[in-house]
Length: 187
Image 1 (spheres, rainbow, N blue to C red):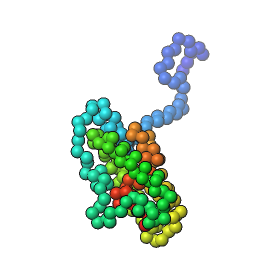
Image 2 (image 1 turned 120 degrees about the vertical axis):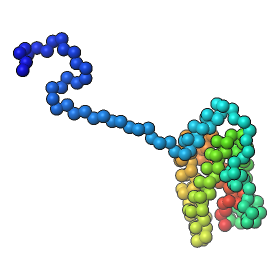
Image 3 (image 1 turned 90 degrees about the vertical axis):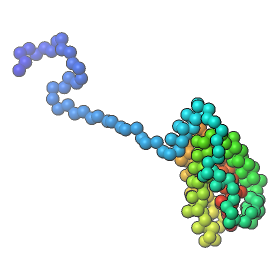
Image 4 (image 1 turned 120 degrees about the horizontal axis):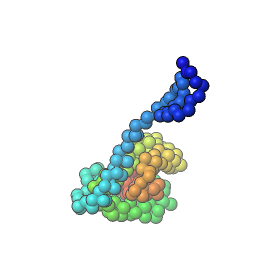
């Protein structure tokens, strides 16, 4: 029991509460990085180390050539055949832009992995969300909306922020790149 009501000269390390002190410790573990975030980190490291020229990775080579089973049609012919002749000029310029972006980073294995990832995601989402609409005879507006909402937008969202400038327009360019190489079609 206290004999003096005065508390002078006390040194407190922590709380001065006499009782019923409730503390909450909020410990949060760092969030696990996504696959694409790990690739971006590897790309930064690769740029710092100035990597040696390398071979094009297999996954990217797959998307750079048309599948052997596909009929060889130009991108313009594919767009014309599907009633999208209004997109021919835009699509051809976009496809060229995507090809140049891939070539610009051809000496970076990590950038190639990122591009292969983007192309693979676009292709997979196309196969699962758009191809069934085409097969079912959906209208152009339904197909185009599915391309935007189910294919392009989710890929753009998973790529941000991007040290490779993977903006919505370049992701769209990669889609036209796939179309030009017979991996995606509208008919």
